[in-house]
Image (cartoon, rainbow, N blue to C red; front, side, top):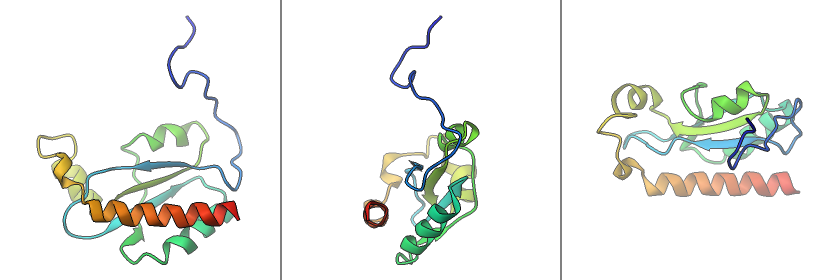
Length: 128
């Protein structure tokens, strides 16, 4: 039976270009701490550029890799990814995620603004 749906025509590519990377966000953040990003199979020059751009944002730190979200499906299929979550990912995942405490009001709009600015700056650098 043929596959149907919005993503049925998507095919992974074996090698990522400098400008090819999936961005995934985990939208719950604990009130304390900043945000964290993690890199998955990005080409070295893209890794370096991401780290350089994000260094301008002290509330955005490089965190440990985590595979409990959609970005891991892309990585398993050869697509590089950049994921964002709370710098307090351990407690977030252990105590809040996918429970009744996982509520929209946990999202800190100010942290989303910081991420938007960081991604904007990254995209400008990629476009130049």
